[in-house]
Image (tube, rainbow, N blue to C red; front, side, top):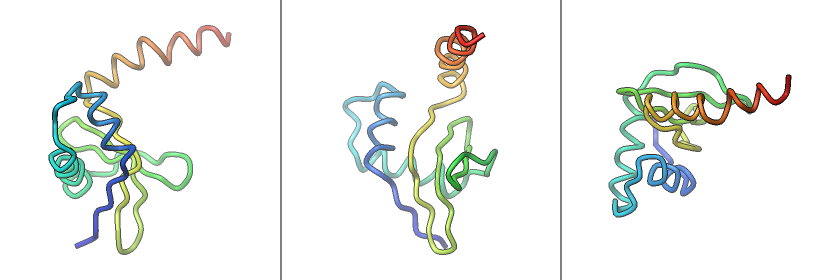
Length: 96
């Protein structure tokens, strides 16, 4: 079993993107570690990082031999689709 390390940034992003401001850090830690443990690698990210997805929720993590370090929380599927529509597509449209 690999050790799971959760960054403070990922806990902060979890609270922001789920809009659960009153959730305890320990509960966020457990939820993020569950995603890291049971999730599957969906894609590779820049900087030798990987996106891990579990039940529609995704995190970006560094996977080493002895541990998995969760760097950030990307959100659930609905949030990521909304973000892509509102932020990413207009950014590319302005570049053209």
